[in-house]
Image (tube, rainbow, N blue to C red; front, side, top):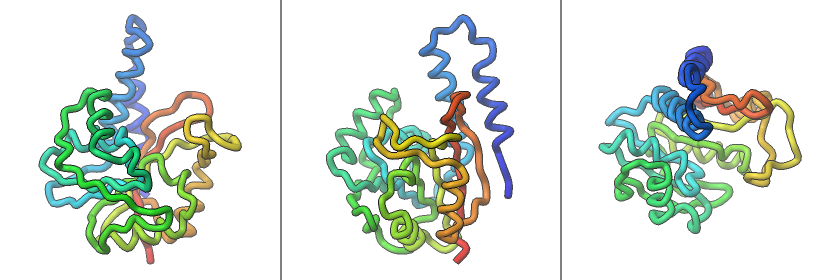
Amino acid sequence: MRTCTAIALLLIVAAAQGQSSLTKKQRYDSLMQARKNIEAAFIQLSPADKVADIGTGAGYSLVPIVSRYPQLRFVAEDIDSGYCNKTFLTKAARQLKYNINTDSIDIHIGTEKSTGLPPHSFTKVLAFDVLHEMTYKTEMLADIKNILQQNGVLIIGEILVHKTKKKERTCNYPYLTETELKDILSANHLRVTKEAMTFDNGRNKYLKLFECIFTE
């Protein structure tokens, strides 16, 4: 298994060094930009890629990716049309200060057990901050396998914790530990081929990316 963890941590440390004169917001923005740079390098989209983002929500994870690849079309999938729509994507882009063409994003509303997307259609499926919220993880991962093309990859981004709580205030679902996440992947015939740390708050939470392939 290849790992980008060491590189990611170096980038985050470099971004934070020499910033004692900056405001708290400026330091935060700098760290978040370093995180987005790591994500972009990790995902490595090409003009030939066909990409679906699962659990898009209001688009705060998808918008920075779309902004880097204006030539690509993306499918944004979620179970909640109240958040996953062009209005909220435009709002997210404005708040994050990205210029994107929302016409390059196709909205699709799925269910808790299925994306409803056509089989064998995507080279890469993105699932950012959503696995811990899936009620039917086995069914959804099976569906993701179905919509991927042969040799397609699933890229997962998750907030992970060292010590679990009953639920998190921000989403009302408990975050996973890294062991729990990898157990879920293994149980669903997914093998991690690459991983990278993108942010660590120095306390209980950290963000990590996993590139996965289905082994069956």
